[in-house]
Amino acid sequence: MSESKSFISGCKGLSLTADEKAFFRNERPWGFILFGRNIGEPAQVADLTAEMRDCIGGDADIPVLIDQEGGRVQRIKPPNVQQYPNAAALGVIYRSDAEKGLRASWLMSRLHAFDLLRLGINVDCLPVLDVAVPGVHDVIGNRAYGQEPEIVCAMGKAAAEGLKAGGMLPIMKHMPGHGRTMVDSHHDLPVVQASLEELDACDFVPFRRMNDELMAMSAHIVFTAIDPDNPATTSPKVVREIIREKIGFDGLLMSDDVSMNALRGDIAERTRGIIAAGLDMVLHCHGIMDEMLAVTENAPPLAGDSLRRAKAVRAGFQAPDDADEQALREEFNAMIAVA
Image (cartoon, rainbow, N blue to C red):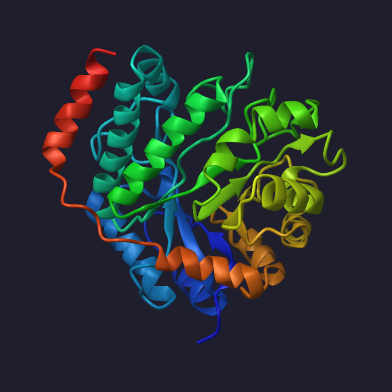
């Protein structure tokens, strides 16, 4: 069987259309991602993830991603799952009691794993390792654990460990750091003027401390001290010199959504730029077939280091621990009730 192509795809609705099924069978994305438009009843979500996997071989370790952070970035909502707090609220707990904060971060991720794995979702785009600066745009805002790299690192590591204990895998985001953005990268290109020394002492720290994780997502941000002409996602210099060398990350690096308007050009140009920069995977989220076709025409089959990293991810899934869901949920809810 031919290798998967170097892209991750969304779909349009609650089930796959005939065109989507044919596209996935023919083009073989490495994995899939779900958004709120794909979420109905739990049985429907489980059916959808099974449909997706069936199109490309049916293996349980085919990655199916979701952004299930808590707060406003929570794709699956009540009544299907409880509403979880945002990262900043957990950071407040940490600053009051570090041990309790770390436990809260681990517990929330472990509960995400209970919620998601039963639906066929095995990858959560969490933790957010961006170190927020005062005045950061709401695109990050309270999605960050705090303004101190040590707190962000500790809480992010606890979150990642909670997911892995539950049989899921985490994706660190947004490498090499999105916490200084003053505009929304969904609509505009953020430009960060901080010096390399400032970035190295703050923004890069959580990613460097967690550089042994298997997956990370890039930031659509220009760092003028590194590459004033290209956002990190399409910058060979940022990928090679900062992410791979200075941060030391050798895991699978995927783009943030290729449809976001921080990137220049049409979808085909963006896809080529992402691959040329040295990323392993192009993420396309919107389920728009014309855009999906443009991505797959420009995203090559996995090979070389990208194939090695992709195989390491699929080999990295472990059986969940035997934790008592109800007991953990009661512990967590009691903890956040008094925060």
